[in-house]
Image (tube, rainbow, N blue to C red; front, side):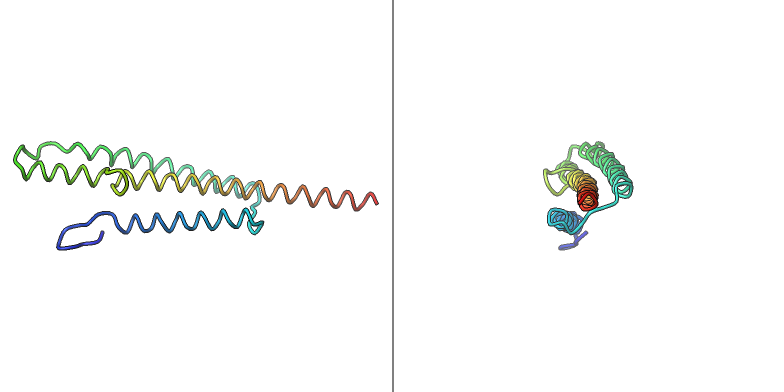
Length: 140
């Protein structure tokens, strides 16, 4: 976490890393669309399964982080209410809370799983096209 004035300023690094993951997924998507990336079906299915399992784990962690919004026992004094509000904002604030970032991370993991499936489809389509071309050539 970035420290500004002695206080943690949020999950800046996690948010930045999430942006990089999203860029990487976009690059992979472009490679698939342009014909520069295809994957053998079994390898693609195996990789997609791993990413989906990791996405589910990230969702479970997001639900746990979501529970941190309700911190009790800090008292009814202004300082206790302020601290409770800080916990709530760190847990979930709509974009950069722990739960929010974990959900976004899970979404990117699922996106990568889908990209592996697209790469598999590209491989199968290319394989079928080559097979068709070879059959056509041998019939002439």
